[in-house]
Length: 148
Image (cartoon, rainbow, N blue to C red):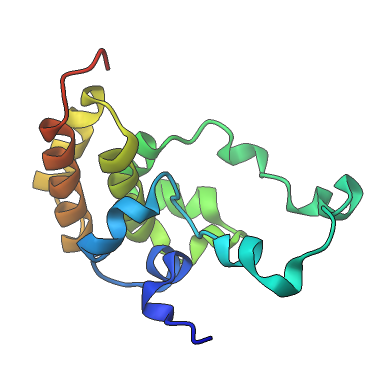
């Protein structure tokens, strides 16, 4: 078996500096950071679930509890840096997370997300964020109207 890291969703959401290739946007689904599906399907990981005590240190940091994809798309880089300080989420940076969040909104969002996406698509964000936001606007506009 051969692993092609260029197809790894964790790589694309954490390490990839530019746009996420369109072929991988739908498979990204609602994943903003990482994936770890490979850990779930790896035959070497066929053991029982870890105890809650052994995973307590990996629980979600409370400062992220109310952060939404929409907030990540619109978040100022300085605010993101403060939020991500001391966490692995500092690695992709504000632009990487905004790009990822825009793709997630394109996959799972509602029309109520269009204003923030349109602003990001036209705003001063990085080219990767502008491109992802424009793609998400197109994806949302192509869907049937919803109550969002």
